[in-house]
Image (cartoon, rainbow, N blue to C red; front, side, top):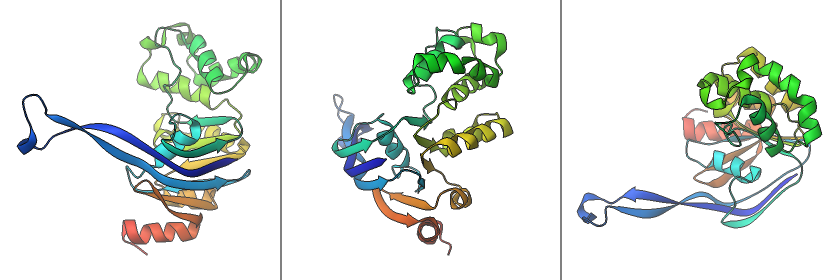
Length: 239
């Protein structure tokens, strides 16, 4: 389950001062940006929940709070079960280590035990298609090779809670149909799925419930058709 109670996240951002206020010794100021503002929600086992909102609304911050990547500045977060974030693919990778070592490290960080990692190692390697390149340090990989390794390792996990950000999903990795099928299988295996997407039709077919995040606040939480209708009407300007 996922339970957020009055959760807020604030970032300190260094921004340039307006020209009239600049001085030789002070050209920047620190501003506070509220990424999440008093968000409360509960997601029960078995739910598939979509998340919509404009760019910068706080959607990715919400996922990172659920994943434990960001700690809330205020409020309480409770997440029960193994969490797999299908984003932030670079986390846990060491550029000087070879592909095999990086598979093991990433898998351990995702919650697998050592026996499970070793059992799944051949399957992960085969799906990556990297072959003998797994013997080389990751710093020699192209961007596409690195993403293959990261995606193959991440999607080998059997998660209780799966967090998907469309921006980093399979469609952007170059695996095309093979990667999409693997991600679909992972979604089916997960107990809870939280899916951030701008593809509203996709959410309509996958998620019975949708959250609308607007300016860091939970603007709406309800049946997907109702939330998407409100979102389209106000944000996209269509009924």
